[in-house]
Image 1 (cartoon, rainbow, N blue to C red):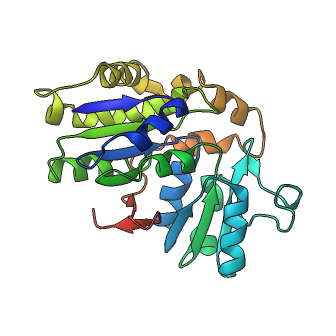
Image 2 (tube, rainbow, N blue to C red):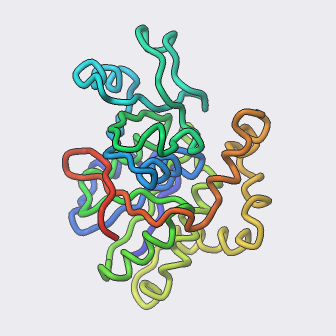
Length: 251
């Protein structure tokens, strides 16, 4: 079965669902999963995704070597929100350079992306998806002959996010020959069609997205949009392990 979920409203149902045979690929194109993939490509040792700011701060207290990364309302988390420390990094992939994250462990919290990853923890495997590593993910799915694939779009607040549907649709399109003869949910058909309509100019297509319009209006963040739409810029496969930590795994 090839299936796509579109909104955070579906996270609770995922936690109750039997995903033991299912591979989940989580997309938060603008920007959490794109930043995670960039961090791993630049040598980060591991990323601990957490839902709440307080969880990240508690991890730093236990492990002073941890870098704190994340956002609320799109911008880096500051002391006013934590009550104690500014986060080292926000949620821009351009911040996750080899100089900043190489060899380091990170605790990361974002509005939706880290929540989406945690919602999939009962799955057989949970992969971090983005345009940046789309080819690496699709190749792995083909080699592993995955039969049950659930593409999870992280969304914006509690709504669907157009850019995540584009990313999820791009993955559906890439693996379509693998699933076309088997059961394919209407949700996968929808996501694939949306991607195929916009694939000729992703930057133009993504400007329909509320997230993209917001970022493009901010001079310090507008370049993130184009960065996150670079297809196959990173040959890296990130997986959420049973311990709740994202690490790079052999592709």
